[in-house]
Length: 203
Image 1 (cartoon, rainbow, N blue to C red):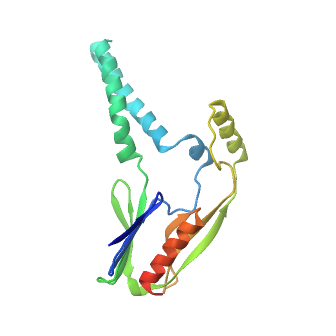
Image 2: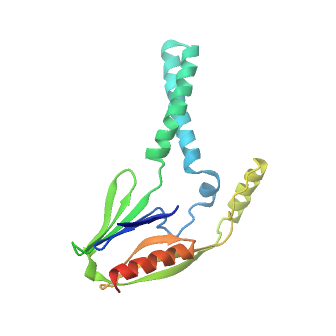
Image 3: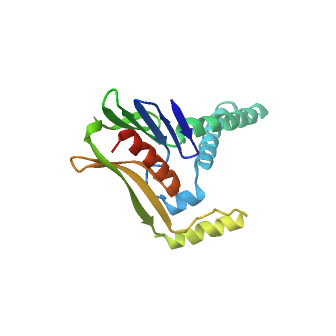
């Protein structure tokens, strides 16, 4: 099986199977405030702090203050951070499996558990195409607020507050329905996957 992987997707294929997995499948930047201030690492820190703080509070309420409880707080705070980041605040991914031997395509979303979003015969795919979507900045005040906070902390968020163009790779079916399997700002990546998939499907 030939594999190709980069930071936004993973592609593996052989004569009968084409497996594509990505964390980029929604052509949307999300909330201005959320994307600018909150990220998965920061959310994991907050969750770890809340968990450790709750445990510390319960221990103090039950047994009174003690130096041992400070150590417990730090241990829980440091120990739960990677757990929250890996299992709770991990990125969702979309996996598309094209199987010639079964004659089927299955698209599933992976996060806390796997959920099948689409399962259809391969012959239902009429073509694949790339769509373009430009997202405008709606909350200008929010952008200025985040930029002000970032500047106060000496942090620069590259591309934040700018218009963004997304390129979406879509499966088009004979009944007129469609399904997005990849959406990214990097046109070259989308074109690469498009060409690989088109060659595999021979359409």
